[in-house]
Amino acid sequence: MSIVIEHDKRRKEILEKALDVFMAEGFEDVTYQKIADRCGITRTTLYIYFKNKKEIFNYSIKQLMEKVENDIIQIRTKNDMSNTEKLISVLTMIIETLEENRGLLSVVLNYLLYLSKSDPDVDIRVRRRTIRLRHILAVMIIEGIRAGELKPMNVRTANDLIYGLIESAIFRLVILKRSSINEVKQSLILAVQRMQV
Image (tube, rainbow, N blue to C red; front, top):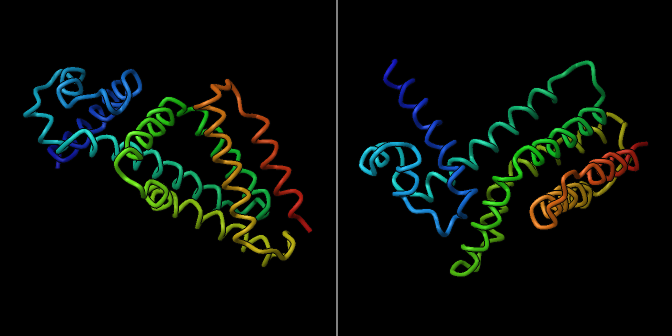
């Protein structure tokens, strides 16, 4: 049992250090050897934990998405909040998580640009990674409508609006290098308020 715990702990340490390398050099310029060097281990040892740099990178993204999903679940299970308050709380948490992880977002954008050179289906890859988040937001909108807190509406359109604002936040953080995206947070809150009955 302790071997598994140590293995997981070591994987997490490798991911954190690898992320620093990705943020400093960009996905394309990072080599497996650079990651091993930053971690203070050999390439052979690194292969015990990950088969290549793409797997390391993808696991970092997966870890972040799992954290966001767990945070959403905690908010959704609160009994002292209305459905609308839960939706606003989730959207606020997502924006704050984006701000905290702007370095990772920068690397993700770099990675997507790298992929787009050889993969015409980058949009499909992004949608596959974000489908659970989109689904959770749609379910929250439906719950708000059923509870009579939100106006009857086309859920897909409302979800696209909310998700488009989240994408706007990413653009402003990574491309425009904004230090804060409070205006997007306020836009999301306003959008939800306009959906209210």
